[in-house]
Image 1 (cartoon, rainbow, N blue to C red):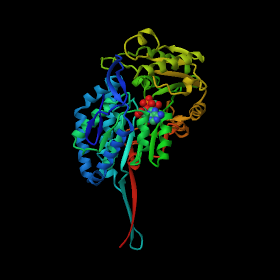
Image 2 (image 1 turned 45 degrees about the vertical axis):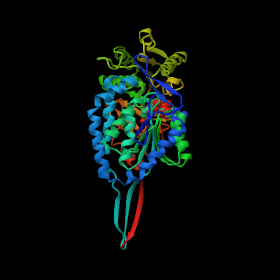
Image 3 (image 1 turned 180 degrees about the vertical axis):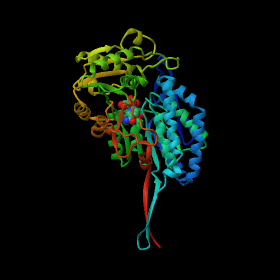
Image 4 (image 1 turned 90 degrees about the vertical axis):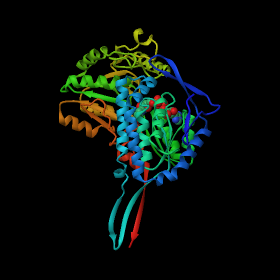
Length: 478
Ligand code: NAD
């Protein structure tokens, strides 16, 4: 059973159930993750609180120097981290490398702490009076992460939090916790003091214990919409600052004047990259103004060429989904789409996909999907691309704006004015213009809107620094 990290010591939780962890490409059990009891959460929070005052008083330059050490270690262990992601999550090694790179970029960003943590000063606001603000850490921060980016998403959180002077309790995904363990080991090797980063395995009960712990001042969460809503409400009820990024249903529109080669390859990568288990996955591709027939034909042809297999095998485009229960959910969605009248263009349920060992679903395209159907509204989080059509850009914008989720929307067009209209009128926080996955890099906020995000300050970028610090205003007369 995997150990928790509490105050610098790796400890087995006692007397609690554990969940099996799988290699999704083979279906083999590779480890067990404990569902840690409340007592372990309390000890981790106490260890973080104990380490907190000394860590907050550690000079910024020392905290930054340790972050540079961490960056160097992550680079040295880059391939090892990618291999862990592939083994525990199933994505291809190439995709895992991309994830690790995006995660390390958050550490690069955190290394700018001496600039990022600066306050502001206004001299002579009145006769002999100056005003300044300084940034102070919150104290103990809790981080709760999803299964789909087991290295990148923890790195969205704790590097920025700790370089800002906070201490941290990380609750990894109960399905993919192996990456977080290696991140925590390397963090200790970089020289960070005991208790600055703690790690407690578990699921909803463990999270709820963290949300209720009085010493925890802030909560960073990434996961599905219902869990994000719950965490936001519950953390707020306990008086905590919270940022909670939730689910998505991303639409990608293609106009007849688009660059078709670019649009086709970008939509295929968006829908089937990471086996569709990505909050920025294009989930519905929509032909605008007569583009639908060509869109269907091109996507069908491209999807049929995708090679499915074990993520470590060369030449594989798409790995398995994370777990068998998740695979059954995805297959259920395909079934339901067919029952509701959608036309299955490419069927990922074929025996060559689903009868092999591991948790595979083939790339699937379902056409004639409407917003009234589950496939047009609900997040599937698997390799299933729905196709639909609208008459014009106005209808495209309305289609997105009627959805409760608002993570990403994208448009492929050769018209600057259409792109501009789309950018300005679509109610989503991340917009792709001739780009299929509109991922903000570390220095920009990961900016979900509507029910894709609960809170005020997003993860990453200057929002991240604002979230992990509070401002103190000093008014002085001399
Ligand atoms: P999930 O919501 O099942 O789990 C996420 C985390 O929340 C896990 O650590 C889990 O233990 C915990 N959790 C789950 N249910 C809970 C509950 N009722 N109470 C308290 N804690 C709970 O999500 P997942 O299946 O691991 O990840 C996939 C989801 O994450 C998708 O919906 C995806 O869109 C979303 N996601 C969003 C972003 C983003 O930035 N918006 C990024 C990645 C993934």
